[in-house]
Image (cartoon, rainbow, N blue to C red; front, side, top):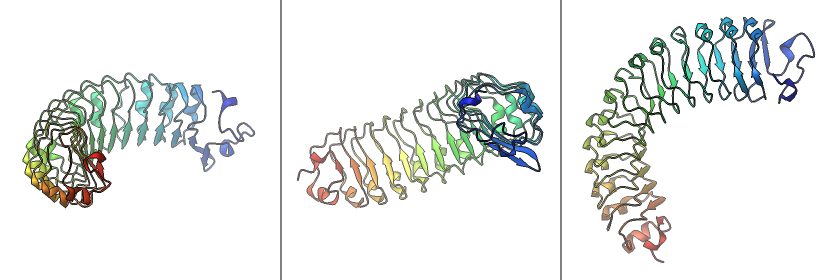
Length: 362
């Protein structure tokens, strides 16, 4: 495997006892871990890897491996397998026999399909981010212990309904695919992070209102023209990103998200904001550039924890006087509006914090 060019090869082949070779860990005289990530390995993993019956961890991330042998299925003690960022375009079916696996990381390869993984029932983490997958096998629904599932940056146009059976998921990454709909996700009530940005969704996923533990929700760059009223059920949300959609209004229930720290509505079609926006008093960042706002509700002045407020590229010709209450602002972006100047009293309050500076001439 191009050993001459390896980055770390101290003591390799200097003895018949590999426990002192770089990247090798032993337990009770047996090889238990191989950690040769970012080490310059090339070619094919040799079939003899399957003889290491005590191996619990194999980390070969960030190399140039082209092939994994079928014998990898013999590693019945293996718990962590990391083959991320290699040159793999397929996996042997035998990988589906390693029932001991708890973590399987295959991100950053060229996989176009997956073998049957339905027997990997002890998996808690599965990452397939940045591959060329066009489908996910239905057997994924058997992996009931999964807490983290990464499928972002693939070529997925649909997902199997069995995805909705993964009720222990806390993190689900589906960003940058071609999804126009999602399966029923109302049972994924343990989700804390849901990333479905950069897809082709025209509606929020069914059952979104049941995901009451969500802290982070990413919906950027889809085709959404509304947010359902059920969004107000997500009272644990800390960050909500809905930029790059077609929203023309927000439901008043947005005001129930009282734990929000960050709200991004960049590049939509919003012409107004509901007064309930003033209930989001924990907000520190509010991004509204690239909309059609001609006025702001006076309730904006309730957001006294705001540190950054971006109103660039709207239709504002004035600001409500209540904006003077936002004394914690470090950045106030107003470029691309119909404003020619700000009242002197605002310029005093926001001295050096307004962009463009010409709105507050010295």
